Amino acid sequence: MKTIATSSVKLAASFIRKGDIAAFPTETVYGLGADAFNARAAQKIFKAKNRPPDNPLIVHIHSKSQLHDVACAIPPKAQTLVEAFFPGPLTLVLKKSKKIPPIVTAGLPTVCVRMPSLPLARRFLRACGMPVAAPSANLSGRPSPTTWQHVLNDLGGRIPVILKGQSTQHGLESTIVDCTANPPVLLRPGAIGREELEAVIGKIAVRKRGSKAVSPGLGYRHYSPNAKVIIVNNARGLPRTRGNWAFIGFSSVRGAKLSRKVASPKEYARVLYSFFRQADQAGIKTIYAEMPQKKGIGLALADRISRASSPRKSA
Ligand code: TXA
Ligand code: MG
Image 1 (cartoon, rainbow, N blue to C red):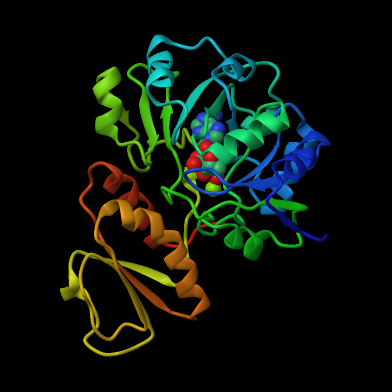
Image 2 (cartoon, rainbow, N blue to C red):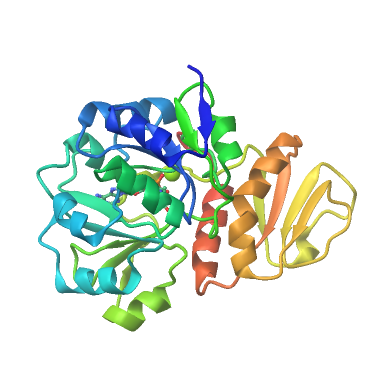
């Protein structure tokens, strides 16, 4: 299959409208979309990504009025989150509407829904004319793509079209909050911090590591480069000698084949996945990553770094 990379919203959306798939940018990471009401179209996403069928997708909308086509019984706290954070990098778990086929939610009675804030994503979703189911546009198990070239590297030849945009603003996936529970549960930290959420709806529970996988995809080793990732708390944990290793973090280091010094957790989040991919391309064996403080986006960053460093499981 030939993969077209285009700047035309109309062209990219035409693929979704005819029941095919298309990659598109958002403010978090690039997504691989399909008509959320069309089971056969959604099936193509799983095939292209090599995604396990028990890992459900996020449904993207361009207007709050579409919320009721995707979800039903929206609790007051969910409504408050919608008013405060839509559009933006927040995904809510809600009771699903009958219009969403089971393949999208991997058979769950709930659905993930999010309204991206990136203007190009909104224009694309509007042109599609229906809610669009989309996980990140990477091969399953790889770091999420933050540029259209990352999408091409992973999915070139496997998908028909990529809508080209800028490299993404946040660099990490959206915050996922399960609103079917009270208090709501933070399933995946993201660009919107726990503190920000609690400021509008009060207490939020946090899913414990190792607890039953409420968000099925989170059970997989994720966001990972081929290189081994080792967490360090400062530059003292690094090799003393020059070698085939890389470093990313707040410190200045010597001897690394590849290193990236970041000035803030925000910058760290923005460049992390791209750094992972760069390290893989350079054939690096070990990546040392400095842990940020677990507040604001630092919580999401720490989560992704820990996952990338955890022992290999299935895809
Ligand atoms: O920022 C993002 O969230 C990006 C952009 C494209 O929107 N999307 C994304 O999707 O990263 P991804 O690849 O993480 O896949 C969706 C995640 C999975 O971890 C899945 O387990 C979870 O959402 N999920 C989907 N439906 C769910 C549900 N009903 N209940 C709990 N978790 C769900
Ligand atoms: Mg993903």
